[in-house]
Length: 329
Image (tube, rainbow, N blue to C red; front, side, top):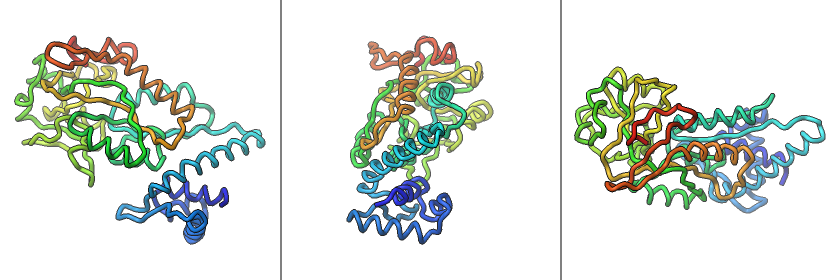
């Protein structure tokens, strides 16, 4: 077993392709293929399997990669130490489409960004968030669970050696353009929404209900607009009278008074949290990012009212960057 073999395994896992890993490592594809075969023969385990979507780590491969990356990182630190080179920081987060995740990421870069760094914030489909943490492409994943999808997602987490840590629990809210006919209502029902276009984030081939980023995903919709880009949501809210059901965390500095959040009348709730791989130790940057998320979550107070669980956001997520009403989360 050699350090170069470990680096090849790491590259294959990152790119999901032997050919792309070879280009990244500036070697031929047969060289990496042979190195993989020799390593698998040496340890007596299969590290990768081929699927219709590319090459994928086996459970044994995920476990092996956790140790391999620690060796690679320690070797890099050793080389940097004795070459008198300051280590280049690297860190990756995969997340559903949450603005507060981007805000926490900004704080991380401000605090830890140096002369050289390689940070990634990947806004992904739910299945990709889970896969990126499973294969350790990202140290942290960010997604939500509800009464509807919890059993399925927890089963997936257990099967892939992932751990879910809650950050906050909120009632679903509806985002609307301020001039929308429903914007004047203090609370909105599902019947109120029936005739308006609903925006949902496309989940690709894994378009199962339990992978949806929106609460109450099993509803039958007359009008649906699927998107992959968070930036497009505001345009559709303003120009098409559409709506989206989400957590209610609404930074006013992004949209000013144009987009408003209204609580949805429902018994369902959303628990937003992070996932980590059980075989991977948290890095300094991972701990710092989690701390930034928890600092924002601390401004979200969950209260138990007479009509059930409700949520209230204290004045802001950061300064006064969240527009809210007394009953908004």
